[in-house]
Image (cartoon, rainbow, N blue to C red):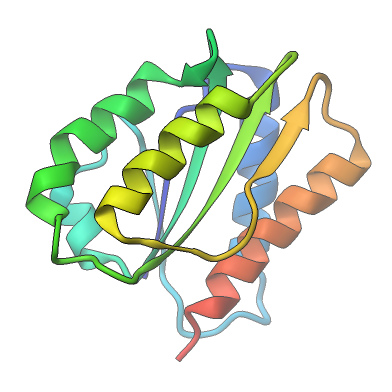
Length: 148
């Protein structure tokens, strides 16, 4: 199961989520259930049940969203040790800089000992067709990596 945990407060984040989902749910990818949870609703039970993770956040004031931080705060200790080595990927939208958001997520996922599947996908400003395609590709890549 692929768990997609996202905070989607803006039209840009919504467009990124939709493209990620379209890729993850592509008909060529078989045997992978895709579960989508807003960051404020995702639980440790969701994390423990998943085989891999795709995380989405805006860059807010130089950091990941408070919602994604809340997700990590409540899931970290129940999942510590039980999810070692599971793959994850990240997409981030920012208006000017996403460095702090990426660093924050990578610090936490390093503590969890998750395995980064690929470099974070960063989109600055308005989404264009190339950014949407990159989001689709991210979703498809992560889901395909979990195929049996």
